[in-house]
Length: 181
Image 1 (cartoon, helix red, strand yellow):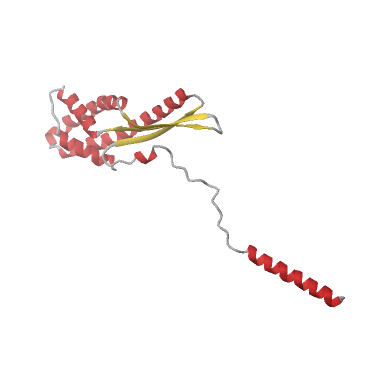
Image 2 (cartoon, rainbow, N blue to C red; image 1 turned 45 degrees about the vertical axis):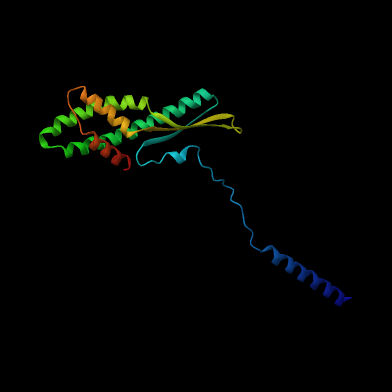
């Protein structure tokens, strides 16, 4: 009987050892984190246009839209302020000494007026909606842009109204240069 128990115990030990070896096989674990790309975000990067992406979320479609628009206008205004400020500084250093102070002051005054107008007329490039079923909220995704040609044309028209002129080509080149920085 003892040899029978010995063989039976040995058999179970070998069986357990064999089955445990199979479980050490590498298994591919799926990541619990899903990769999600925000709608319209692929359109933000541009070398020649000033673009911003914004999102608004609310249980009301109207409020979600207002939040997205407000955020887009705010981001666009801050980017435009930085870009135009750098453009005016560089344009002022390029001018000769006699024209520098007067032209820079005039440009600064007119860029404020032009920036306010251009932001209100910014073009919507992408406008997408989503409805989150888990929360019941609406989400609005927006990408807005300002075209340098339009901005420089409006700025030039503002300055021409004072009887002065600017180098539109140089201003556009500087504007695009500072968009990319």
